[in-house]
Amino acid sequence: MAAAQVNHMNVNVCLCLFSYLDPGAGSLLMQALVGGAAGLLVAFRHFWKIVRPEQRTDSAGRD
Amino acid sequence: MSAGVCPAPSFVPGSYRDRSARVFVAGDQVLRGLTAEAADVWQRLQPSGFWQQLTAAGQVVPTWESAAHQAWASAHGYSLVLQHERVPELSWPWEWSFSMLRDAALLQLSLLQRALPAGFDMADATPFNFQFRGANPQLIDTGSLRLRQQHGIWEGYRQFCEQFLAPLLLQSWKQVDFQPWLRGRMSGIPLRQLSGLLSWRDLLFRRGAFTHIWLHSRVAAAMQRRGGAEASASLSTQMILNNLQGLSTLLQSLKWNTVDSEWRDYYSTAEHAAAHEAEKSQFVRAACDRVQPQLTWDLGCNQGRFSRIAAEWGRVLALDADHAVIERLYCSLTAEPSDSLPRQRITPLVCNLADPSPAQGWRLSERGSLESRSRPQLVLCLALIHHLVIGHGLLLEDVIGWLAALHAPVVLEWVERTDPIIGSMLQQRRDVFVDYCFARLQVAVGRYFRIVAEQSLSGGSRRLLLLQPRDSAVRVQHD
Image: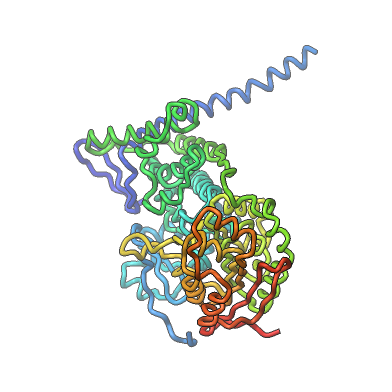
């Protein structure tokens, strides 16, 4: 990937040669927040899918 | 054009933002010049399974490398030329219905969801990257695909929220048509403005309102006030995929209640419309048979019954000013199998003929007007002219003159003043429409057209005319 790292005001900014769109201030923070929250949800759902069949199996086994 | 003559290429006015992959046209050919970096992406993209799947599914415009105009492209700094299959009819997001914009948005998300694991990314997230082929959305901006940086953010996130999500939320939550907003500001609805329209109920109970709109706009404003550059991006691909999945689920959960439309149930409530349907269908079918149109404009298409007839011969632009009826037509088409003829050939568009899409954007040439983009070979103008003259106050002769300027045969339904619909239209307004009479129609029609077929409908208050423009290259064949 043709990309260049430049130092500017002690902050690393990644410049992509194909970037022409301003992602907008705060886009990184927002995406981290939304991605993180959604990540937790996905993790919870994943956990739930793993746990739920066991619960069913257990209750079926007791009958 | 004579064989052997090579038309001079020129850049498409709307293709200027992405300097690395600009579109140019030469005659009927649609081409794209790629810089060395963009060409490298293309070379990697083409053999990838991800790209093959997109192409096989018809979700991306067919594209291939071309030797055409290589010298011209090289002189402009491009090392490779791609050719795209021409999209027959272009349309803009302010002409799409709710579900059309949503389907384009879902395709955008789905493309990115498949691109990221394959090592690709998309440079932007705008509805202008998509066009409808019939009622099927398709990515046309192949240049927006690029290689994924190991740790990058989704740069199109804010743009997606402003150009896709905000208009859809406005329609779904507030019952406000988004088309005038997008037509008024092509860059979309600023999140701060949509945020101002949200109630506490929206923020607390509606999925996505707090995060994607309210907080997004606040964070952006705060970061802008703070100034300086943001820290380098370090989002994992999985985090971006999570965001994409969340947005996709949000979009799929949106509903738009179309009950307010007065036209939506026109055929089920208007007796006259139902009674004449068979006669009109027969007349339209005969007209299509005589004209053999490859492209029909169905003006005031409503449920698209006559569009479906015209689709047996070629493509159809089904135009109606009522958002709800276009939404209903689009949903009925997408409910059909993807290879059904109507779905492949009919493109429904929200279009008020008294206020159609103008030329817009930079130098007024970025997004062309409706008439500059498309030329019909047959025009269906059924049960419409009285709405234009009496409903919108347009001059009868002007309307006929406009139809003549389309240079295509016209199927025109004339509604006499004795018809109940005219009576009900005049009940609530003063009858100043002295020009609305058949004698004046004959004079206006005679100026521009030749009447090649005429039929009175049962009941006697309506008649159908097949008009041949005197100066048109498209000819009505004689029986």
